[in-house]
Length: 382
Image 1: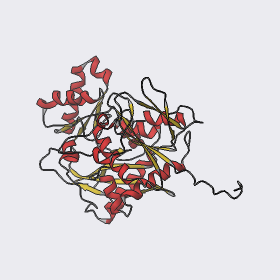
Image 2: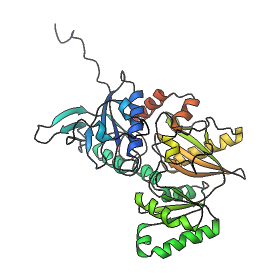
Image 3: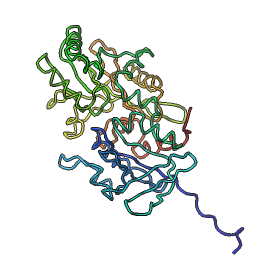
Image 4: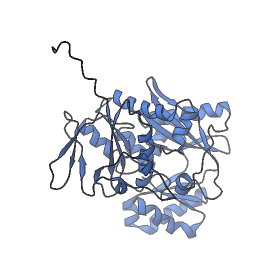
């Protein structure tokens, strides 16, 4: 048969590397999130390569087994449990002209795993959600889902996030920051700064790591007696801490998703008070499965206002792909933005996919839209 009449081989499906785990305190939640995404990716449309990053930073080839990536009997999963080898490592290319991923084992010939067309970075917290991984992918010329280097860094650092929002006229609540050198130079003066803040804005205060998420390391402090322990807990996760005053009101969340014609907001959700917890902490979110109300019971004007603010926050931080924006609706009827999350959780009980489900975008379609948006974008300045 001549070459002119030979059947053509089908075009190669885009290859998605789902990267998860990582070195942050949110390692386990990243694994859970990645499991849900792996379950949802359309295998008829995409080839998938799961890559886990261990808690010590090794890039491991892992089993494509979402069932082993869930929380079971209150036990959290890890990349170490999923890695196909205790020593092997995955190496991404650093040459933009080459997207070939290589797997190496000590004493063995490196094995080519094929090209990667897009990375879905399901990492939460430092060393993944904060612009570090995004910068590496920019250097490699590999498209990726979600925010770029600047937006990822701004979205991770709550101080600079609030500074950006303030500069764009978005309403933020009172806060004070204690930086590492400030604490190391004079702990008494740094502590007094917090006490003076409490004197101006009142107790209780929330003491939190400035660059962590999933409510990890956050303590609600009702009076002076609990302050030192709260500072120590926050600094255990991040040497830079943020202290916020209590905003009395309702907790409202809103998702933003990048469509072909620009970002759109989902229906909002409300996080009701959780009786078994002081606030919506890690245990309430992931272990005890506290659930929000979707859609939030808001009036039309309130819904429209929080959706507008969510998109404004997305644009202010130069985000791409997706964002979950968290607000307080205060007792005087004003929305105050608390923070954005540039890679929100995708666990089965996570608010971001639930809000989009209620907005008419199902889980699988949501994942597909994020991958398609990443494939449409180029790396580099844009």
